[in-house]
Image (cartoon, rainbow, N blue to C red; front, side, top):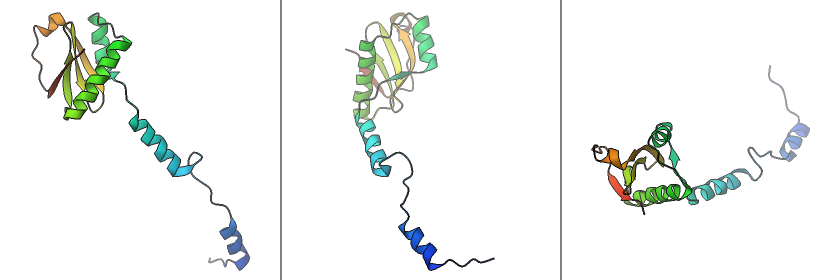
Amino acid sequence: MIQRVSGVQRREAQQAPVQQRGPAGGFGAMLQQELAKSEQPQGVAFSKHAISRAQERGIEVTPDLMDQLAGSVIRAQAKGATNILAMDTEKAFIINVPNAKVITAITQEEMKENIFTNIDGAVFLY
């Protein structure tokens, strides 16, 4: 069945306020929030595997170490690396750069016995 819309109903529909979807401010505000997030330096996260390896191997994860790892990711991103070995004299970490995620943690003793494969960069922690 086809209903006929009167002119009065059309005018009321045209004058009705347009409701915004999403949070206040609409798309422009959401875009600005996302741009601001991408400009903020992102931290490094540890995978479950890396957390358990660090605990097993007695590697203390301090705020200073987290800052060093985050800096390593930033430097590796600038060079286009995707998987890096970030190391100092006592410990090493394999990090997936695009996801900023530590994949595993290794102590100095284990570094002597291992060959690192599937990495395309190395960063020395300082």
